[in-house]
Image (cartoon, one colour):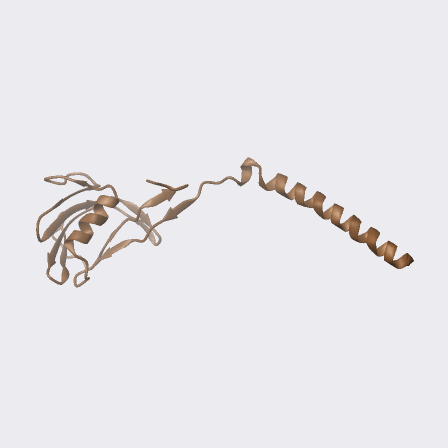
Length: 142
């Protein structure tokens, strides 16, 4: 009988101690120090010759990324489009493997998707082009 009473006292003491510690931990985690901004990035749009991406899909993606459709692109973040071509000045962006500068590119499409990528400043054909992803800060798109 004595051991049963002793066990009940120990269990009650541990329960009270657990409730006290839970309150202390919640107090610490509820402080301002733990409220850090969350940044979530979407996927990168990867374009390459032969890629099955339609011109309409690219235009939709550019609109979602807040690229401005203009007659003659002259600044990063602008593009123009016809039935088979999109001229874009891609914004500079810090990709996972390092930063890339702004690029002025002509993307030509055929019925299969991306036909060619040409850097307009140098006239060089590109093997691929990445368009930056949208960033979300605490549920708000940048």
